[in-house]
Length: 144
Image (cartoon, rainbow, N blue to C red; front, side, top):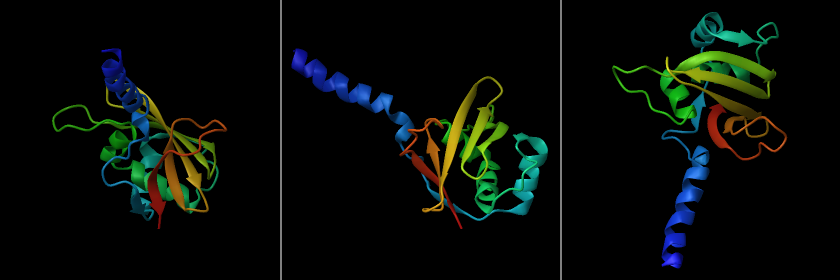
């Protein structure tokens, strides 16, 4: 009996404990920056670090974040028609060109998501945190 319970409980714990590593449908996305999307995000979202010139990879990430469905997927959520939509409330350039923190909200809830840019792979990864051991993560945006 105990073996059966362990056989069921351990995989469940592993599944739920690591759920942030599952890749949303359609990820990674190949994205080229779109000036209108970048301008819209910079204008409507608190964007800390905006005094420094944006890199092309950062512009691609902002283009990705311009789509509320991408923000919902990054937060591990899903937007539903007629309900509150997930959007970016604040975007912080923690380390320009390398680390970005996004505060996402849907009107009732808030959650932070973090992105790390791997220059060799030209890819933004959705990571758990921006500490030193943030390796791995989920590829979200391939910069075109």
